[in-house]
Amino acid sequence: MCLKAGRVVSILILVLLFSASTFAGKNVRSHQLPPNKAKVIVTFDGEIQPNIVEKYGQVLKTLKIINGVVAVVDRDDIEVLQDESGIKDVALDVEVSVVPPPRSQPIEYQVQAIETLEANDIIVGWNLQEAGIAVSDTPPPPDPPTEIGAWNTYSVDGSGVVIAIIDTGVNYTLEDLNAPNYLGGYDFYNDDADPLDDNWDPPNKHYGHGTLVSTIALAQGEEKIKGTAPNASYYALKVKGSDGTGDVSYTIQALNWCVNTADPKPDIVNMSLGLYGTGPFWPDIEPIYRAAIDAAYNAGIILVASSGNNAYSYSTFPAAFNNVISVGGHAENQTLYAKSNGGVDVIASGRRVPSMDMTGDATWLYTGTSNAVPHVAGLLALQLQYARENDIDINNGYQWESVKHSAIDLGLDPVYQGKGKARALESIDLIASNWPVDYNFTFSDYAFVDNNYPVYQIGEDVNQSITLTNITDILGNTVETIEDLNVVTTQVYYSDPNDQNLPSNSVEIFPTISLLEPNDANSITLSLLYTIPPETTPGLVKTTLELEFNFVGNSRVIRVSYNNEPDSLWYAAIPADLDLSNTVSLSDFSIFAENWQQTACTEPDWCGRADIDRSGDVDWLDLDIIADNWLAGF
Ligand SMILES: [Ca+2]
Ligand SMILES: [Ca+2]
Ligand SMILES: [Ca+2]
Ligand SMILES: [Ca+2]
Image (cartoon, rainbow, N blue to C red; front, side, top):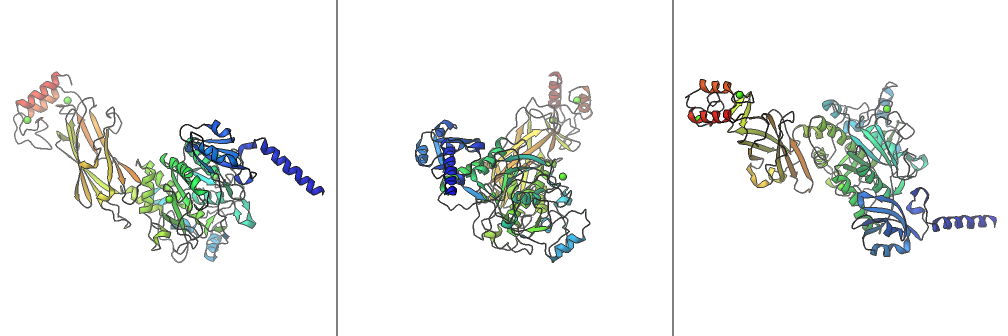
């Protein structure tokens, strides 16, 4: 009887707590609420109006990314709330889990390889060799390492790139995961500023999920193990508790943090988590979750998530959203990891992958698509670093396509392998080769040539053609013709290498595809005609070409900017300034006089530049031009 009384008291306290409508710490978990309460995500048609929701309960969080709030309301009031004017959607929050990764002891060849390492050597797993990143010292049989990976070929390690790990937190105190590469983060599960991983429950296969994932993406290799991008910076965003579960609203909060709070904003988001879009709750929460994903993607972030581990033909969400790369897993022997879900873009090592648990133990191997995702996150970091350091302006759509189009076809079912095995080395090869089109600039009808640069006169026209050649298939993975690339816009900007001659506004030369002239299935020539504005400062000028492509069968627009020197350089000159001294003076007259009455003047010399009107002879008409400009005070 005593026990029973105690229970009644504790239930009473619980009821009192909730009837007071306060939720200490605002970290309420949806499954902990009493049956008459519900945790909901509410979005608004216009501006966020918490007061509408507060009529029915308590607002916990405001989420700018979805123009909404997270709240606890009376379950009976949900339909009334939905009908309030200004309310767009109301969805029940739902709990999502990370899948505990089975772990196994290293198989014999790996034990041998690890044992032959010196005590201070760092593990570079077979998985990094598979991903085209580095030669491994624990290679999978039967092939010995025969190649150099992206780290050495392109001198990249993820420097300057920021990855957000949305997971169970990270043990950022470990030597291979600590500051300065660790930039901080947030614990949305407990609503505090410390995202330390607490997902430790070996009997239930929890070994620190977020720490395992982070290790594969970015472990620094200072003490035990190297990840894919060992010098990338990262945020730990904890959205799951010690048992690996947490509400979808925490993931949306983490995405909101990435877009609206983080400084610097992350470049890449790793989500080794997911849920199936099958329950009765899904139609309500799907558009809200998708809005958060789309907002992050449209903010320029590239998102990567796991396909899931049930051998289904489709991926879990968020991987299944259009704007998230879905990654499945392959095994050591180039077969599919048997439980990997389909509906993927690419696959990466997902079976028996070396990693480090949250206690710092790096002697086990882990299985599941959660482990495949961080290979792609790290690959994207290496790629982005290469682009930035080589002044190549790429966006997240371009990164996505280049990863898919450089993947190696393993000959597996396309539903389960996507485009194949993701490869860092080949994906950077693509970027380095101007993929998806090569190009060359040709100038014509210039005044003369100086130091190999065509010289055009300020106030007159620049004539230029740019031939684009389809190189989408350089790795044999694609068959698009140049028309399929579907150039959406073409823009040209002018600036000199020191940014001194830039016209006051960027100049868009080709706003539509209608001015393109296809040569054949694989090349297009753009003819450019552009008047140099009179206010242009004389000097060397650079043409930058920006192209957007829209791949057929894929609505993703990719944008590439070309500005290779020296073939895009030309010179803007004051008319009649024959010696390019930036004034018209007696020395120009003397060049003119030396060439007086020459005939058969042709490009590029135009009779020592003296045939100023390019008429074929040096005569009084040319003298008029030089005199006019001299008198005009140039
Ligand atoms: Ca360190
Ligand atoms: Ca997707
Ligand atoms: Ca001069
Ligand atoms: Ca002439």
